[in-house]
Image 1 (cartoon, one colour):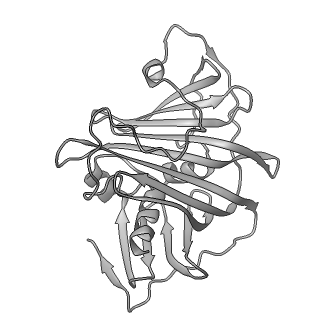
Image 2 (cartoon, rainbow, N blue to C red):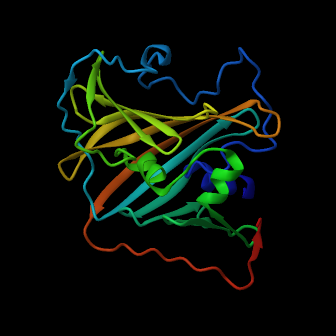
Length: 278
């Protein structure tokens, strides 16, 4: 149980992008896939946006909220781990806090708090806690991580704020928007019909470490379309052996509410807990 708790908290924030215990998936081995019901895009055709195409105006439909609460299930598959439908309660204060509570059979087994500065989570099963900064994560895993990206994974908004200079180009059934943030190049794929972010591909240069998010099952919440299902694929190169390690995750929401009142973010570290890691 403790191993699942740790993986869940780390995975939901794209933390521990690969585990030192994961076996390498050799070339030609199929990536682990929780299901194939998501939009398929040929990366070889979309890695670069044709400069000679005419830019088009797009009004991206984003989720506006003060606070969000959700009841969700989390699944993960990798070369060494496979678990499905872990129960998770999520609370978000926009651009400030992400609160997570993992429940087992009738009781809470873990709790996490993600802020723009750091990530803290409690393993209640072993009475341990972990504190991780984005600087530590970025240095350790050679991929720039930030709060905006983690929040985007859950709610499906653009992880980088759109600017007046950003240009959209028509690509099949999508409008594509390329953005840059430091060493990260982000391609956003906006659905032609719903004007929602349906896929996000973030690639770090020059490592080519990649996160791909696919969003589906859009339902109306407070007159806004919200993705009730998201698929996350991680493909990250290890600094130790220069091999790429792959992980597939899914988040499915059964209930999502956008509220104006603070739902509360109870979080404290008992004095009896032992800090693990640095």
